[in-house]
Image 1: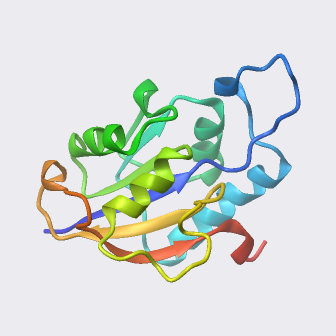
Image 2: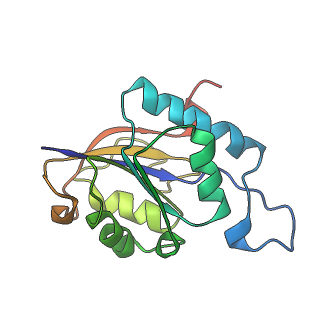
Length: 165
């Protein structure tokens, strides 16, 4: 059996409202458009999550909500808020469903993306992983606990600006 990881950075967030903490920042207008565009790309390609592992931040929660996708299990974890790549791997190793959407933040998610794939996609934006960047990665493992660095094969990568409105 294979496992599929959908790795998504939250959509573009607002910097308005000086009194709002970083954790509580909502999406801005562009972010509110990007999340459904990414979801459309995932639907078109048949990449739909069974399980979601997300940061607890307002912008990751809103990204997931605006994607309009369904999943059997949706879990928000404080440990994924600005998590390091090692912490993301630990959280992913506890997943139970075949297709997992991991929703997080930079710089950790960019580092995680680079470390988890055998070969990076030939895309100028993969290394910096802009807002709402999404990579779909396939693993030839039966269990998420067996996932190791440099073991995934990229099935697709996109950023919202490359998708139709």
